[in-house]
Length: 231
Image 1 (cartoon, rainbow, N blue to C red):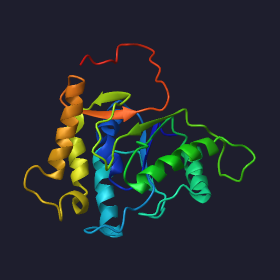
Image 2: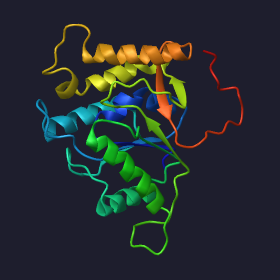
Image 3: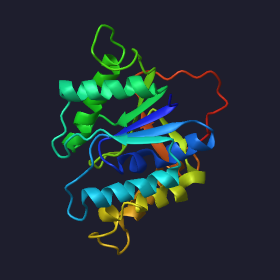
Image 4: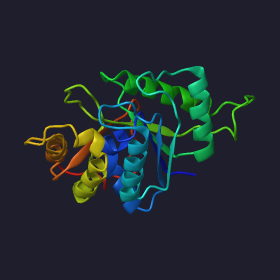
C-alpha cells in the first residue's frame, strides 16, 4: 500500500511537476510511487532504451518505493475503457491514500487524456461485481500538479515549500538529458533555469525560497492551522 501515487503521462512529468513534493514525502517517511502511463517515445533525442535508463536514474535520486510503466501509447493517449480498467487495477493493487494527477487544463492532449483517465479509473477501482483484479478500493483524494505546456499563472489551492529539496529535484530532472539538455540551447536562460525561476516565483508567493503549486477540484480540510506558511 502506497501513501502517495503520482500518475505521470510520460517519464519526467512527475519530476517536473512535483519532484520536490515527492522528496518531501519521502523525508517524512511516507511511501511514494510513480506510474508512468507511456514511455514518452518517440522524441527527437531519445529512445525507449535511453528513456528507461534516465527514468531509473531519476527514480534512484528520488528514492521512490515503487515505479512502473503502464505501456500506453505516447502521442495518442486516450481515456479508453481498456486503459481505464488497467489503471483501476493498479489503484486496487497499490491502494494509494493520495493520488496526484496532471492539472486538467493543458495544451498537450496526452496530459488532458491522462487526467480524464485517472479520474475515471479512480471511480472504477471501487466497483464490485467486475472482472477487475484485486479488491475494490476508492482512493480518498486526488490532487493535481502543474506540468503544463501553456504559459499560465494559475491560482493554486496551495503551494508547498520545497526550498530544502530544490537542488535534489533539479538533479532528478537533469537525469533526463535527452529531453532537457541534448538538442536544447544551453545559453541562459536554459530550460532548467526557467524551472528554477518558476519554483522561485512560487516560493516568493508563500514567503519561502522555492515552491510547487497544486490544485484541487474539492475543498481541502485542515485539522490544524500549524502547517500554514505566512507569505
